Length: 95
Image 1: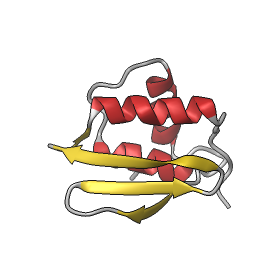
Image 2: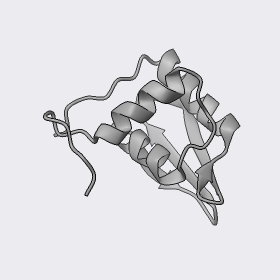
Image 3: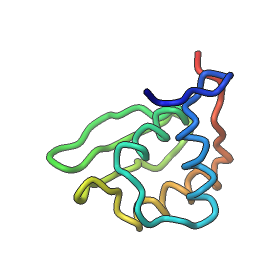
Image 4: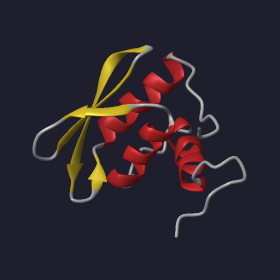
C-alpha cells in the first residue's frame, strides 16, 4: 500500500518532487515519475512502445518519458524538473 498524506496526495510524489528539484535525477523509478506527473495534473495523451507522452493545458511543452529498465532517463527527469520550475507547478489537493 502506498502511503497517502492527509491531503490525499501520495507521500512518494512529495518526496520525489523535492528530490528532483534538488537535482537528484539518477535512479528515478519510471512509475514514480509517471505518478508525480499525474499528481501534478498532467494527462497521458499518447505514446508507443516504451514512450509515454503527457500534457497539461497550461503547459506548452509535451512531456515525453521513456522507460529504460524500470527507470526514467536522467535527461528527461531534468526536463520535468525544468518544466515544474518554469510553470511554478505544485502538488495540489486531489479532487
